[in-house]
Image 1: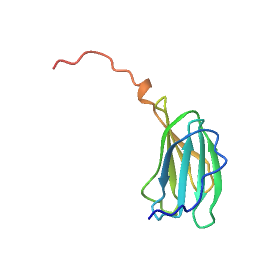
Image 2: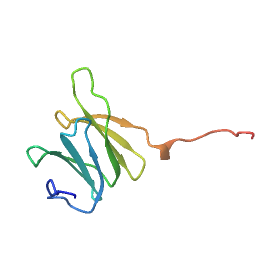
Image 3: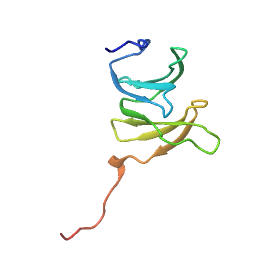
Image 4: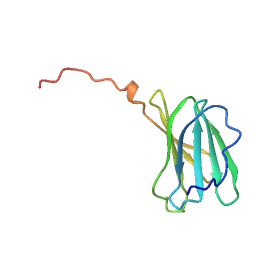
Length: 109
């Protein structure tokens, strides 16, 4: 039998993606409007909000860095991807969009 742990609130639009961190203490949710919320499961409340453009999916990085910090990948519908620190919500890195890659020349198959 399934049990409702808590209800995700204060979202702007339909939820498009959720992901658990490695130890199951945090849940990230992303809605169609681009709002990302990080939820503390034990406290049953949102502990961080991030805003992006329209999102395709989010995913916690499976490994921690040397200081024990976790990171979240946010992938937009236009192909742009961003890494955020879960420690403080700071932007860490933008990954190149696949839509901006240009191939020059020809390939013989």
